[in-house]
Length: 188
Image 1 (cartoon, rainbow, N blue to C red):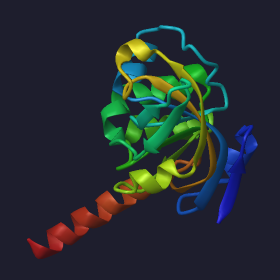
Image 2: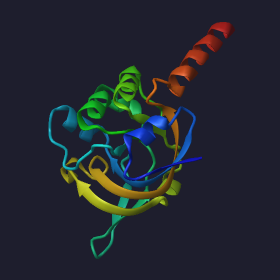
Image 3: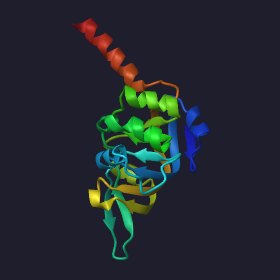
Image 4: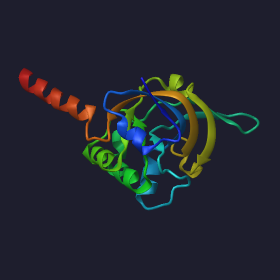
């Protein structure tokens, strides 16, 4: 098990390889479809994303009487929906990590290699367990997109992920797809 602590350095991210299990401690920013399209369309992000990690997640949140937010569920969203935009977000904003589920395509893999980013897989179906790793909600941005689509600034501790696309052009998703195609050929 490897640890990745905030502030995230490009050097530490480049050392990660496909298959590495990682515990992330520090800051994460959520971002789903609306955020990625917003950034793709040339709008300025409300936060500095350089050397940050974007989590494809629409957290379930509650606000108490004092106005403090808590996250009750924080499962990953299917990442391939961001494929049209993700490579440009990596390039233009200098992010070093993306967390989601299901993997991403060739454009994102190429951007990971060129710009030093990794794709982390978070376990789907474990939304409440992952929420327990969120220690605080530190900001809410672009609330006009709706709470699931807004950018949530979160502090996490030992947030568990697995590297499935690394900064060296390796992709577990691509390997599984190729192996599956070979297996399918053999049974057909």
